[in-house]
Image (cartoon, rainbow, N blue to C red; front, side, top):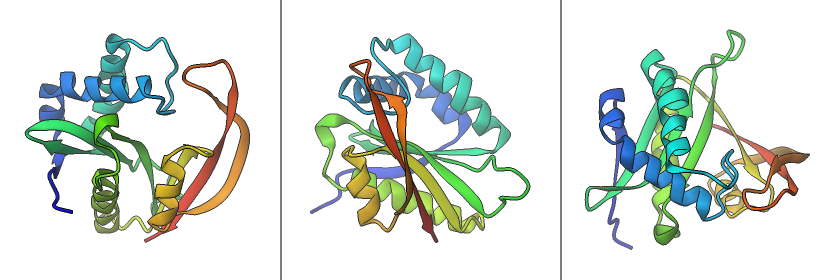
Length: 176
């Protein structure tokens, strides 16, 4: 398959300029059922607040790297690498908020974002990458297929984005 998207790192200034696109991506993913910490109702304002209050400050501190996948100059996916680890974990980083627009899934975007993230983690001398995903979610087999191992499952960890039911989460890791 021909790659029809480009992966790039966004600086804080670039991310700020593209806040509307980042917010729209998060908003549509949550409304499509992505269990990435939010539940419905979930407004575009709440989406923008997530970026401006949580992600942008960490980017400014140098503890978060943000990548996007763009197709026709439009953001269609993103992922973040969090490196704000305690002093006894300088070798570890965390994957956060892997998102691909629901209309463009299964085209290699998530895999490309993760490969880019892992390359940066290696360059930062982070040889252990961790993440969590809702158990049984569509992302879990993706992570397993690119080498992530299951460390364990925590029951009743998160709310379903649509219903008031609890789901387990799978904690995963990969040695780079």
